[in-house]
Length: 315
Ligand code: RIB
Image 1 (cartoon, protein in one colour):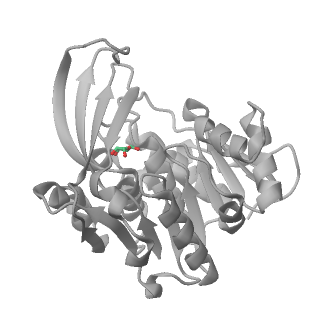
Image 2 (cartoon, rainbow, N blue to C red):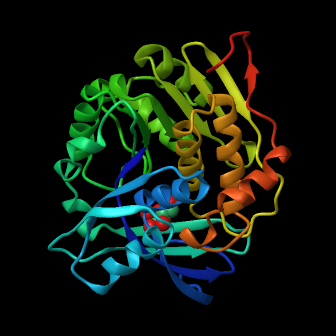
């Protein structure tokens, strides 16, 4: 079972030739709206990528029409949204600019996401069968409280530190899998007094210090995973990117679905890399997430994650 605690947004996309500099106005082309938010994205990506996995989304939207919009694709793809509450503030909204190379810039008005509370997650969703998935678009202290409660109940914890934020050492001790991009790795590293640029060194140090697996996503270079037993590397799916927005969420959702099905870390990283790559071949966030049949059809184009710099087998 996968339980995602986190944000739900309405994403407002605009196509531009180039992203504006501070103080600059650029004229855009097409625009469109799609449900988003890192939490809801990861839940939807897991629901689509999974082979019948149960996915529960927990968070807050506003008492407005955007609240229904933000949960619409989750409902369509069979995720449980009964624990998505209605807050006093409006549904969160993201402005997303995408340039002609598929790169993006995002600003989020957090709205009701900041009203999401750890106690919205019922006890019966937290147990040894649970993979609890969290990101950083809700109030951090709610995340830390939920992680502590879930860990005590035997759940496994997957924390995606997006957007970048420091994570308390006591929380890192409770996390099973930490997913970061390079910027997020350095932010977590600095809070841990690991003042190096090299994300491999950060990942290795966090893994050894906290007994976790640290996965660093590297954009077009794939991803690397560091655990106390050693390191793994996975490549990307060979594609021409159209829009990379949400690729990190597709990776996390695919990873959660694969781990929930009992795949090894080597296979789960491969599966997540394919899910993330397919997301980049289409516009938008939730509009771009792949379903299981599509991932299975492309899986052979990426090798299972390979052991780097050691000889230990990774489970
Ligand atoms: O990771 C992409 C997401 O970031 C978008 O859906 C947007 O809502 C922001 O949360």
